[in-house]
Amino acid sequence: MAKEKKIQIIKAAEKRFARHGLHKTTLNEIARDLRIGKASIYHYFESKDELYYASLEYEVSLLIEDVKNIFSSVDSRIEDSLSSYLLSKENVPLKFPMIYETLLFLVKDSEFENETALFKSLLKKEEEVVRDSFQSGLKGKILPVNPKLPGLIVNASWGMLFTGKLNQLTEKATGDSSAALIKKGIERLLYD
Image (cartoon, rainbow, N blue to C red; front, side, top):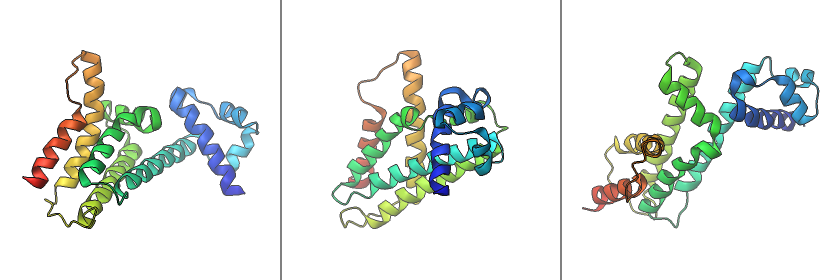
């Protein structure tokens, strides 16, 4: 029961933090959303900052689960899994708004040590999932893979998210999506 209550608080806080940010969100608002007293939040979290990081870590765990689900589909070809993975980054601002906003802050300011460490961990875990998928060779194929390729794919997927946003800002739409272009490049790399 206590664990469920803690998760409820984290989910409510995640919504508030995603909508209003750390500094404009209050514990009173989160408590009001849950119809509990602010003291109940302090029972589980020592501070608003601790709750913020727990909410961010919760989103990271959800994102990693999504990545695992994409690459665990036994019926998918590697190209399809990679395409789904790359396309999933386009949904990060809507599905994982705290991660997205924090990444924007990281790009702007290097003083966020806790967030930087968390995202290094996120990137490392994503790379492990991609590497494991290549090593298991989806559909029984064992593919010879350059050890740097999984890291490049992870970085490219995050880069695509920001490239898409920059293209929207500059109104420079291209015919093919970034995911389609990267998929074609990976297919050539794997099969040519």
